[in-house]
Image (cartoon, helix red, strand yellow):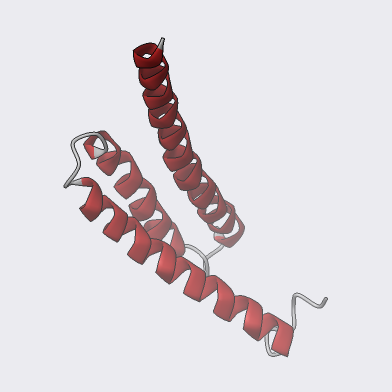
Length: 106
């Protein structure tokens, strides 16, 4: 694949996919945070998750500068940190609920 040829169909589809993915990630980040405000168990996650979304937005402004490679890697890191933070908290809550149910049955 020729990464210098930005007019090829592969490059155009790749860039389109990245842009749409980023937009939906930002939309989902703000929507999920709004929903977490309604539940007391998830309120502690609002600030870290919004921080990750805002860092992704800010790093997007550096994609066409001399820091483009760093901004791209930072964006990928933000996605994975966001997903990991949510997954870890779901795991903890489910484990806590499972332990509570096991104690009540024994």
